[in-house]
Length: 326
Image (cartoon, rainbow, N blue to C red; front, side, top):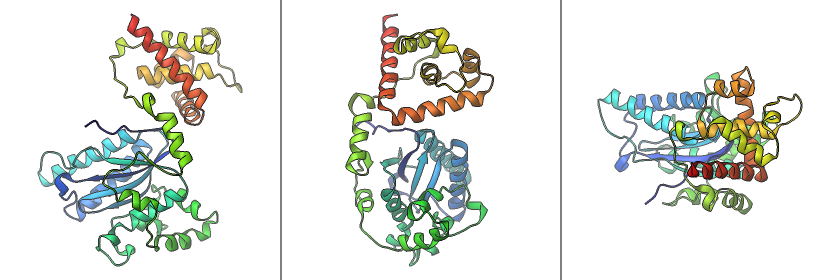
């Protein structure tokens, strides 16, 4: 059976879960729980993954995360891999700790996020481990009810703001929301053995199907850098698509958006994995952070602009066709 495809785009929200192999414990004692919690913060900072909620149970964990950089797979590979290494080293074990790849479900915003937080934080209650969720130490509920700076890495403001625009009401509304034991859409979906690709209103599901369905969800096969089109070939393909010249593409104009230039920067980074410094030299940009900002902006626009996304995909197909002929 093929692995489920991961749909990733900037600022996507996911409910993520993983279990120990054969249902075995992945946390043996409080030190293991603390080790994993510290690693959550490390992963959030290292990979710019915004963790809004989590709960660590003895043989599995749940998380709600947002990915500004569309990098869930890379972040989760770090989290699961590093924890396995540290846990094995501590206990003098070897071999895999988790049953395999994590499970994830793409979640639409607003009410579904609130439901996901409630589901995650009420996990210990459903399992009969505590009578009050405040008694359980290994979930982000502790961070939601605390103002201590050690919880600053937790992305809770996004969730609080869905409950009220008035910060003074946040804690009161949150406590009321999480205290309700309700069988909602998220609970019903996450209790299934097989998760759907996404969860949200029909308009959200239709958008995901249209944008990422069928041929648009194909896996990309990594190639040797030497076999990939060089930067000049990529720029030629972009110029052809935008009906412009390389000279105009390389021209930096303040206050005026140059889509052809930005798409070229994006494709050179995406297809060739050139460094920010290498790309900067091609386009006369001295600062790596400026290149990074261009990449971030174009990725966000592609996630929202269907026409732009389709145009970029056509350029990629044109480049692939050209490579096959050489």
